[in-house]
Amino acid sequence: MKRAAVWLVFVAYFAWGCGDDGDGNSLSRPQITATPTATSTVQPTPSPTPQAAQHDHILLGSHHAGGGELMAHFDFAQGFAELTDQQCIGGQGDACAGGTIVYSGTSPAFETVGDEDAEEHLQPLLPGTRVRLEIVAIDAGVQVQFGGVVLDRAGQSVVLGDAPFHVHGTWQLVLSASVDPTHGSYAVTFRFVAEGSTYEPSSPYTLRLAVADDHHAAALASGG
Ligand SMILES: [Zn+2]
Image (cartoon, rainbow, N blue to C red):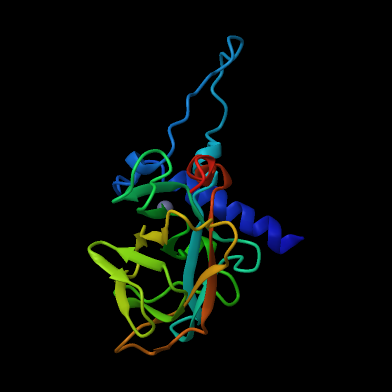
């Protein structure tokens, strides 16, 4: 219970912190409309909006201060990358008939843990530690994009940043429009590596990708 509570605090803190970090993802987030009640004359303490709360982070640190394995904190058992957007390539109509659909989402992102949020086995990384995301296994159709780099094969990697950092990539699933993405199981397994440092590579972590239900309904409607 305590652990869950702490995690919720993390999510709330970082989700709020992301609201104005100017990292260019605001356009891809769903727009929400604020509707304060007429009787609300005092602004409450800022709290995450529902939209911000959906923006999770994989927190990165190390097993102990200054060394040990790289560690990632995220609920990989229950959590997943939710693909909230979709783009039709080369298809016709709402169903994207005959084409390919790219489902994508930006949550969860990656963030190094700070001093104030460190835990027993999630210590802040030494400043300047360069962390690389390395693909261990990846299902067909799954892609991980950071900047201009697209990873879709085991062994490929990309530099996330030099600690401390907070980066947003894109989780993608590329499928024929005739395939129902909710029927299959799609995942990517990765680990974190800090070359030239005292840190050892992390254990592998597997993240599932899931298409938001309502997004494929339109495509299926016309028999795709
Ligand atoms: Zn973020």
